[in-house]
Length: 146
Image (cartoon, rainbow, N blue to C red; front, side):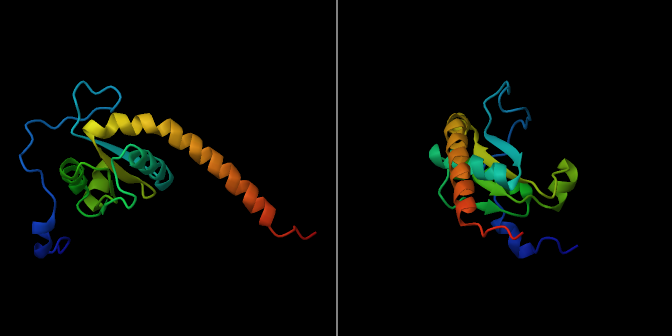
């Protein structure tokens, strides 16, 4: 169908060893230690997660972004040991019903607790900044014509 150029295939990230088991569960209640935690998020939510991952030392300022195939985000997060954003792909979006306004963030499982721990501070800082930006915007807004 021409969806993937054969020349692209060697560059698609893979896991080094086939997994013995693939299991899915909510991160907070998983009865196992996850290799990767995948979050479906809006860009605004992904921004907050990225900031928490940055604060936790799990991602660089310029986070890696993966496109097709969507599943490539798993080995990227596992092997790079850092959070990765994924735009998903046609197959993934169809099967998972990921909305057009959402994307994925994958965080290495061992780093997930540090990201969660950083979330409150990041949310607080963003609330403060949002208020400061609202005040600044109001101060420089042109007067209403009437």
